[in-house]
Structures are given as structure tokens and as C-alpha cells.
Length: 231
View 1 (cartoon, rainbow, N blue to C red):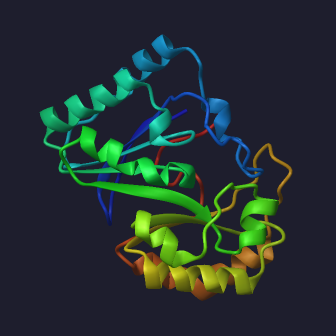
View 2: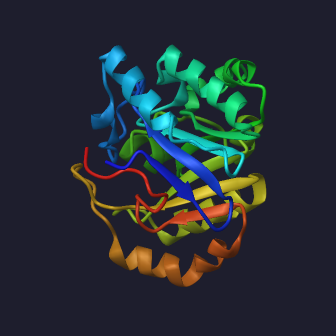
């Protein structure tokens, strides 16, 4: 399991994958990342400190991810991240947050004295597929409401049951309403959901140009940021 890396090319930054308490939602049908969650706070804090000690501040930007939301990180870990931000001159942070925490983002902003980009996993704007198939637990009226809270979203592409029309709408909303985005091409894991190779090929043919957009990142493999792997 790789837990520290550097994202080079566009949007250069250091990235760390930390341990956290169980995901508060924890019901997404496509996700087995929650296997990396933990209940042993001392163990988590120790490991997270070791990972964060690798941060150099060379890009002045740090992305912090975990198997859930940043709000599930131990308090002591958050305090140490704050120390790292100050000591290494970090000027921008990236955190992940589930939609259920949308009204608590200012709590996190109040802890740090640098801008924070919160990434929210929307997966798709098709309400039925998002909530009934993927069990995402994110109810909203549309992209305008999401954009009120989040400047950056994550979308999923290539799951059996998705359609071209769904993806076309998702890409349209991404580029119209959001400053940043991350598109995750689905990789099969221990969950029952299957990958749609034909749909992924179509997406690659139709939307590869999005890779040229400075503020959109496409993860053709879920370890493309250099962190992750087998739990």
C-alpha cells in the first residue's frame, strides 16, 4: 500500500493516503476502500504521522485523502496536518468530503489558514443510478446545488448499467458548473459491480481531450496518483 506520492505534470502536488475512522456513510456498492478504515486511534495517529513526515512542501500544495471523508480523520492527525502546513509553507490543501458533510466545510476551513479545495464524490448526476444502484446517499436537486458547496467533484465512468447519455450529461455538467473535476474510470474490485469495457472505450474516444484541461484529471487506473493498492 503506497501512502505518499507526488502528482507531477498538471496540478503538481504532494499527496498522502491516511488512515481514518470508518466512513460515516459506508454503503456505496462500488467501494471496497473502506477496508482501509480503522478503530485503533493510536495506531492511526502513529501511521499518519509517519506518512505526513514525508511531506516536503516542494510544490506548496498538499492533497490529503482517506477511505472516506476528511471529517473522519483523528483530531490529532488534523492538528499534525496543520503543523505540516505551517512548517512546510503549504499554500493550498485538497480534501475529500461526502455530500453529508456539506454544511460542515467551514469547520475544516477554520482549522487551517490556507485555501481548501473540497472534492466531493458525486459519481453521476443521474439520481437513480447514483442513489439506487451505487447507493451513494447524495440527494440534491442538480449540479447548481452541488456547486454551491463544492468547487471540485469526482465522477465515475464505466460501470455496467451506465449509459452514454448519462456520461454525456455528467461531462456537460462538470465543465459548465465546476472549476475542477476528477473522472475515475471504474476498475473492478471485490464488489459485485462490473466494468463496461465498451462504454470505457467509447468514453476514451469521445472525451480524452478532457485530459488536456488543466483542471480536470482522468484516472484511467485508480492508482494513477501514485497512492493506494492492496489493503
